[in-house]
Image (tube, rainbow, N blue to C red; front, side, top):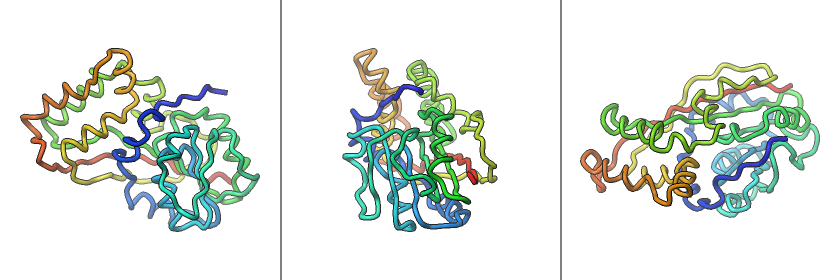
Length: 249
């Protein structure tokens, strides 16, 4: 089985504070497609953002992650049971789950082993939903170009190989279940420069750069942004969100 990569334990508090939440429209679409609201499983839950939304609709939500530090900073809810374990080897009972979700973590999984586990734990009619968001957009101009250059060139060589799946919106991954067509969703909001920089510092490539080069690449980007994004200003941001949805059984 593929070796575990844990790129986020060291920055779990920042991850919980700065990672954007998936849009309400995505969950509305997903819940409309779901046939049964018994038990949901959020695999690779991180700080539990998706699990917390599911807990408003499912009486039982299991949320798993390999990182104890991530789980220590996760959203607490009486309907959520957190477990530190691999998505490919969960402790869930056979045919016990109606919905499996993976938000911005699918690319880290061993796909074949995970699909086998999904098949094992799901009930007839269950859904598997995996989604990821691409590089955010701000102004359609200079700021976006600075972010694109930072993403592709400054920290580009420091991304793990799995990042290519995110860049493809997971469309390059063959999934052995019938697929349901989904629209493109969007995470939208207003961020200050500090919120942007906090988010960038949660990137695994930024962490790898810091360890390799002994400096923070975000600091240099912040200096370039000063002329276009004053620290006291808030700007509209937009993340395209791509979801793939499957009927498992």
